Image (cartoon, rainbow, N blue to C red; front, side, top):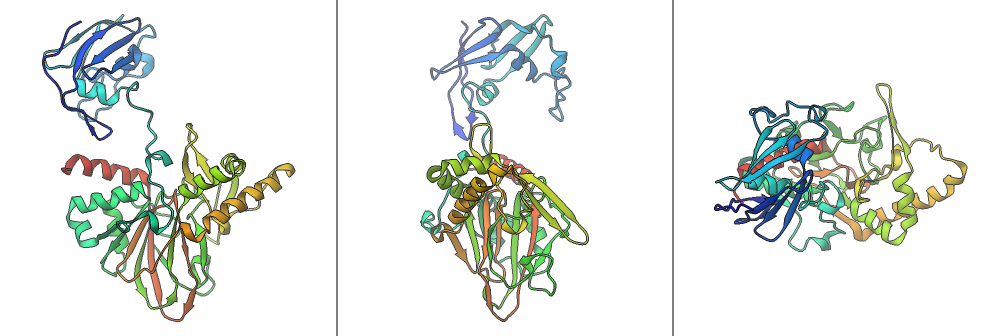
Length: 397
């Protein structure tokens, strides 16, 4: 088997694997075996390799998008030859096409499905779960807005916290109308809803939502009646002269983990029983049907939807009603545990951003007179992850 003379530099899942290079290759059947210098091996299916060809005949060099449909590749695709190149990559020829592809060692190692697990970056497995302030011995993720706006490293700090623990707090955001939209522009893309580009949270006469009252609100996620729900929510304090009205955050993934450990049957029931959520006023009638706890193919929690104000009448089989309510009550009790709550009074200029598919928010009752005015807006997780990916490419560690 041929050996390399160069050692390419690569990063896999953020881990530096400098000096890992290809020792040699073999072609057992319709697989390509790559033996790496660190003792690991990759076994890559020929059709997978051909589908991921990086050559200009297969992929547009500007957009990176494929020209070929998978059905354009012969079903009996196999590897005719494979050689290590002078720069440490691989030169692969496929049969029966006679098509030639060049792959770098970095690309092969970074994308190898044998050595890298399936994508699970949006589930609980890739998050840091927390239970109240005790899990933040170094303090909450707080970033001054001036730094967030001017310094990519400060923005990375805030957005990585939003990705990892589900929230971040900006301080010193000018207490001006519409500033929440400027923050969204630095995080992702605005998600406009029936509430508008932004919405005002303050007590009004004849409210269409209990958020627009002085009542306390239990822990909830917003807009479970949408499909999909907004992934990121922001609340910016403009005025707070009232007594009470403290803001509360709860890690829904942590609460779900406790439910699964203490009441596994309840967890399973909430993960497999869709319920109806609805919001209706004179301009909108929004309905979704989803589970309160959503798990991915690997059984890990991906989304929590919990909003007692928005659950529509349940239509379950008669035998399912009692056990569902037992599970529902068990989860609700965990979400209201004092030791799971982070409580903070938002002052003018404070802006909290949080993952609305994971972190529940609440509010204590407003007990004394005085103006209290927050502005909120929504974005989505795809924009957050895109912004993070670009910042991490451009910003030195």
